[in-house]
Length: 449
Image 1 (cartoon, rainbow, N blue to C red):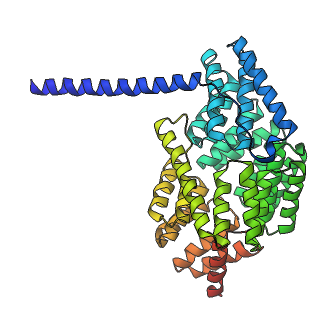
Image 2 (image 1 turned 45 degrees about the vertical axis):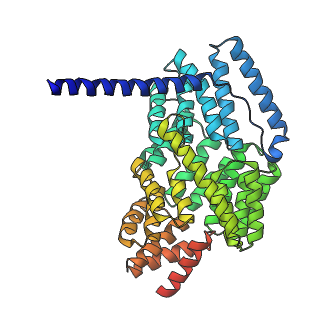
Image 3 (image 1 turned 120 degrees about the horizontal axis):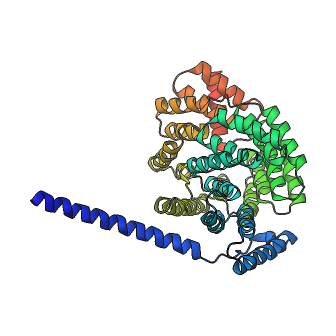
């Protein structure tokens, strides 16, 4: 009898707890659905452009249309697209992702199988680093309409992030056959880079830039990626040219400034590197750029300032991660980025904790395996590091940073022959590399000669 009472009591507590969680979730969902979103001020010179004025007029006009007709699907989707574009330009992804999701959810309430709404939902999930969910949603959209290039772009991105590289190649082939344009060429470039074909990657990214309109954010993003490819093959002057062209076409473009910052750091012009990263950070909210700024301050001998920035980065990422844990539909997974941030603070245990969290979500991704390898390397756990770097090399990547990482790890595992091969290839073209890795790789190779 006591068991029955105990069992009944446990059932009551379970139901009460579940009910509380459901009510809390529904309240949060309702709050998200009813929240009023408005454009946030753009930082820097991005607030003084014709594009910004057009964006403001567009947002206000669409909101007025939706207020008049709450079932205006066309305007709701246009508004979601506008929020997504503003997230990309400003870097305020958490805020604008939720704004876009609000419009998307309203469309899906009217039509749960609305193809474009599902594609935009997948795009947001990928932006939030919810890659498995983004893949599922994109697959659902593709099954509804298998003739859109855009959905195959989502499948490329999601499969790359999940480590499904063969599936990503298949999706890219479908995408470029349907619509050869900036979006498809840029993805072809990325896949060629992943599979070690830098010449092919550069050619494809050139095609992407040519297919776009100079000055548009998407075009200048591709141009900045072309510059990055040039960095990795040691074509420093060509990289600098791309970044300067980008700044001329789109003044203040953050990723062009960041590229110039990397080149300045590589040339050991540390004060210039700080300046360029500061210019980039003023223009966009991007924690990756903030991390590069912190490293630039360290290289310039301003470690206290670097520490302040890195602490702020960790706090911001932790906040985003906590939101994701409480509400997976709203937060942004940042564990891979947190792992590197903790490495900067020499907190290896926390770095491993977050690297492992990312690995558990997508164990086949080569970049995540490289992160695990580097964390174990920094912890002096050479055998574990080798296991993960081997997994990171499965696509035959010729990324110089990955090659140097592999060389350092093989050297610590007393495989001098393979260590020398990796280090020589990684350093052959004098690529732009992080100072720490570059100096350690050069020193290690000297010992092996």
